[in-house]
Length: 290
Image 1 (cartoon, one colour):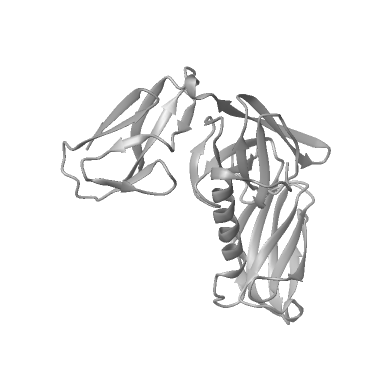
Image 2 (cartoon, helix red, strand yellow):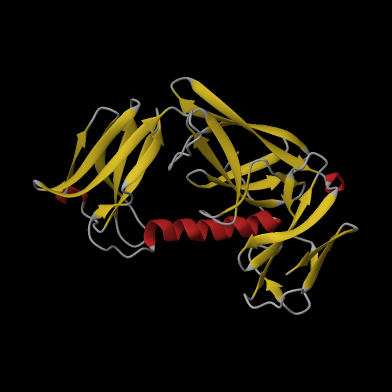
């Protein structure tokens, strides 16, 4: 699953993701000592590493836990520019706890943590480390590469704010290389329904299915809004699975310009009503009218 070279388009994605990961741990300038978050929903039986901002001296602070759902301790790790102070949290029981960050006896910040059991996992196609391109159900094409995130859900369908669990099995047809926490660079190598299994703790496992299609499986083409100022090209198979088609040819009458990632096209907000743009891919065409 990990530890192998990644080439081609997937390699470009991997380089960009690694740069983004470095910035997440070292590029933000501290603004007072505080936890990275105010509230978190975390999965039971997980161990989590959370950033403490605004200090590089873990010995100057202590933590006190109010409640029985987590245990917590401060530690220090090497950062990009200076040592990082981190909060190690073990989710030991369902419920809510409050973690107090203290300097001497003074409380300088608090973090409320709710713990729930992991009942489902899902895959998300990512633009970068944090922005989602497509949520399940979606598909990838053979030969595609990019970024994939595995997320967890509780019994009420709530998404966990952090989900760092080991993938114990990835079916043949796709190669995943861990980049940052639960984000992976992927290479789609063979068509099929590929089962991914994660160990969610407590002797429990959960699975999700990733779909890889051949180009000939795409039956319809669509140009749709990706954001308020961008379009992208989406293909669908006979079952309606959505695929981001990064190599489509788009003609925009001078109003479109290539965006990021490939296959996304930006436009200005003042495009004249009635302006038509077209996309073509593998003998299919689609239009979009502003």
